[in-house]
Length: 449
Image (tube, rainbow, N blue to C red; front, side, top):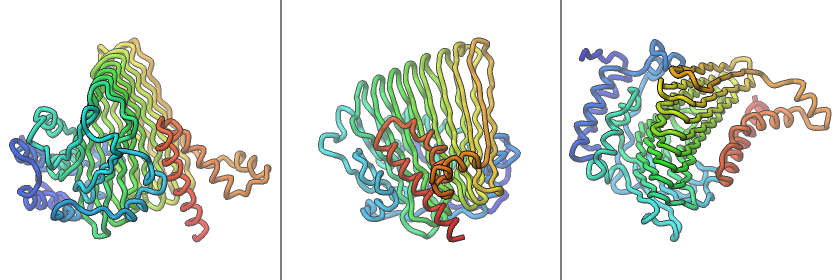
């Protein structure tokens, strides 16, 4: 293999940091070799750049100038500051009844589990640091070897911890499983986590990932591998609220087996840069996938949601609904590719991306794609970009609503259409609460300016 020399400062920093930390990273047996193989792949490819079609709108090679050092290793488990955790999550998520696992700066810190919902016959929980390389070798090793991008390869090289979860066959969990990744501290650091999740046949579960922090120019690299087996039902949600100076690189790799239903949602709140990759492969017939997302951008925020939905087998359905609200000089990106394989007859795929521009200096780039190799399918896509409708504002003002409030109501209604697709009532209310808080802060910022 021809290896491309590392050229940029950031790429050099990644290589130096790996050499300095490989001996202290968790994992026995096959793991060190897998980490080195992942790093070798990154060295060969470097950071993604605009000449790669999937990265034409988010040029990491040009954007990432410096990479902060990995977060310092803690002696033992980090302590959870309840006040900091509550402030980072917001009041609704903080009091959400859930099976909660907290990771701080990439290391498992604590579990908060009601007595009737302890791990056992319905689900099993472990941490990546404790289990990596010790059991379930095939399942874990496959995830390390299957990464499709150099940021995901970096994750395999540097991952410190994460959730290893198995929901047992036919189990129905009454409470959501909430994994919190908290960044604590303002000194910039790199935090790399990886979740490995298996939902066995016929099981039902709600999974929530919250990536939150108090601020700072941190670099977060998060990967979640999720295998949804036959007939299982999964609602998978994610909050990105690491702070306005954070860089958040995320990869979801999802395999959906026959008859399974997988529903997903993501809310991204004004990071400096976020790239949310979602890769879904249908592995069995008559499965379904739906995805709703809301991107809230202000300042010079850049939020990229890129998806590949692979209809590899017949009679599967996929739906994607993306909403972006962009203010100041923020930029939003949506790239969605639906692939229908030659034998995947009766596939049904639709996607829609809509952006509301609150400033003339914002930008939204949308590139929906259909790659169809079968002839008996129903597939379609659409995209719209618009400013606030003055007629709608006038209509509300004519009924006594002040202009500022009228614009806020219309903005909330635009974004809430995606949020309202969330099935879990408590999480739906919490996401609407975060949307309202973001809009309130945006209004206060405009008034102060």
